[in-house]
Figure 1 (cartoon, rainbow, N blue to C red):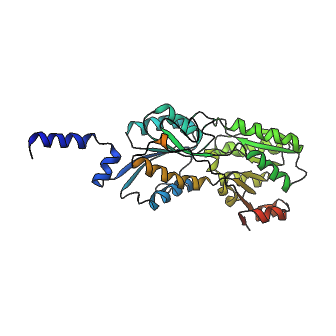
Figure 2: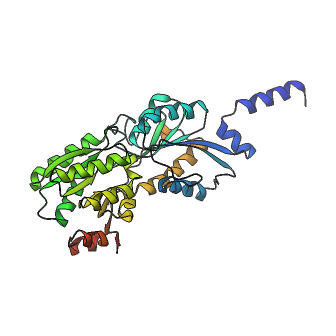
Figure 3: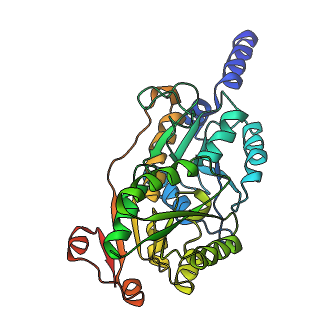
Length: 329
């Protein structure tokens, strides 16, 4: 090989994008993952992250073999998100995956070039993170959870369980910009159902206990958990507080019902994470985020914990049992 040809070859190889270079050489893929959730003791991951790993595995990516994931768990501390986002961006990764509106926002501020796949977030369009569902624009795409619209339905379900319900609490995270809109939708429907609404806030596990205590002291007899990345990983704490203060509780997350809450209604966020792997695969193979429409699945799952219903002396209507996707006894 002539010296000039050799130099040209080296130049082409060294300027190839990481994704293309990995495909040609069989190199290990290295991606980022930013989540506000809490991580169990490493090397374990939380339910949503496990779903993402399963999704990647089904596409031929094996963590520890041909896949390295730079995990960044904020453990519920939203203040850490910006620092983690900047750290991941500085690594020059081919794609970063994230969960939640707050995390998507900080990544949006951190980079306009690194591809971002949002595994799940509330109203990506309304939050100004993408231009539209069909044409996200920029460097961000992913999956948008319909939560704001189902909060009113969650109140209706609580009213079905407890027809005499007159005062309900809504658990909010002050750090989540989407939560005030959730409260607004609950309040709009509450006036129709003759139910008063009060808001309680929490940003820590202890804060959750305090919020439930406050709700009970102020006369609430049921509670709605607003969709939030931190709350999603606090099923055990929420279930304990609900039982202690005798507050039947509904949320978006099936994990909460498995932990002992009364009912969940909403979209399967773990499945969103599994589906996010397909978008990551496409990005690694060269597809631009702006060419991947934001998905907004419309299937809603309902899971009921019969044991919890009995502990609260609630009769589960047959109509709900017949339509529930899963009943835990």
